Image 1 (spheres, rainbow over the protein chains, first blue to last red):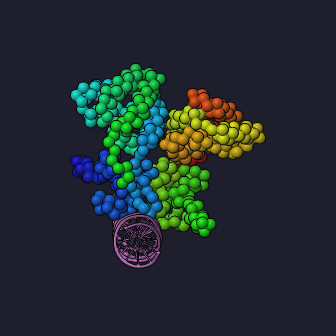
Image 2: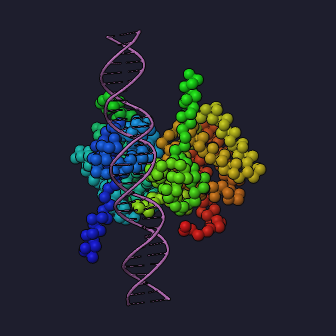
Image 3: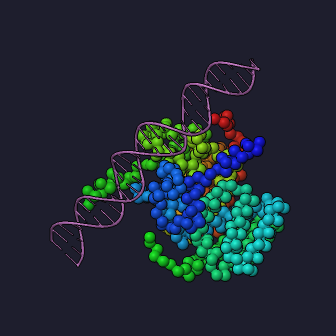
Length: 229
Length: 229
DNA sequence: GGGAACAATATTGTCGCCAATATGGGGGAG
DNA sequence: CTCCCCCATATTGGCGACAATATTGTTCCC
């Protein structure tokens, strides 16, 4: 049994696929936007076959994370401000839907965990822990999607989050932004815990509308380097 | 100049990629759900390299049209009724958003074309042209997305439509269904032509809510063969 | 007669090679 | 000095073969 478990441990922790590894490298910022992704380089960097990274690039291209041009290779796709706003509009519609569904399915455990996340968000804002707040933000949104049980919307949103992670991060870094979004998040949590679907949807939509309005501002105040690589 | 144009004509009409060909075969029903997609077969059937077919299958898998299992190949993904409902819920949220945006951007040409589609829908219902109505239905929804200018939502919705085409088709074939959806479509068109964003969104959401309610009914009355292939 | 191990087959995953194509630099003409 | 053409180079696209893996059919033992 222990042997079986040990053997399973070596094979079961499905070693991250090439696509997952590259996706992680892109969303974590290790690969910058517009950076070229040469198949030969990636294949030896990750110790994978060239065909493997090729398939991975095809997959990431259909996910919208990389851009592939015939005979010209792949590069990390740079999403514009307009696109980021479009993505957030879609989030407003879908996360609104999910918040409403989550409100009707929330359990006592969910209530406890979400309120806990809310409390830790308050603490993070109080102590100025911007990175911690950003991560709690991600956790809260993810938890709401999970509670909603809407796997289709969840898949779409997860994919869009990958594309938008850079703008999201810049927004989180914007001075004073956490203080603005904190009460919005707490309102969403309270509506969810109360089981009020309408209020939860409205609170979520209000939160994301606020994000849409803030995006151009954070872009304006950003020190921008040469746009073209 | 003319020579250049002629040369462009031979290369520009982008010959359908392998992925597009297979996607068409799936959405048109040529390939049935759960049907196995063997790489070697497809490659000689379409005269493409096995690597090309392979990439196409990876792409279609991330699009959600096919299912790929390690070392066990690919098959056409069968979407359940529950999934179809989830997809329609997402459509309700996103097409509602797009209808609202379209109402604020509609031009005189758009009004004319959409009213024309509406008129032809009425005629199709009157003459019992179910297939014609189904195609007009598709055209109308596509036109609204185009008018909205929300390319992100448009991409997501187009992908989901591919997954849902079978359920959509069954619904269109359901006796009496066109008569139910016709006034809903006309209401959407009128609200759009009036430039009333709120009314357009409400009408679109009402239409798709009606679809959600109809889906289980049409499923119940369906003569079902063996589910497993 | 039933079930389990085993062999045969079918299919996918991977690798190396070569052709096709875009990119960048160098040389020559105006 | 500048512009254009051509060639060297880097990189992708495609093909064939081979190894790894799952599935199916068969045989043998209990």
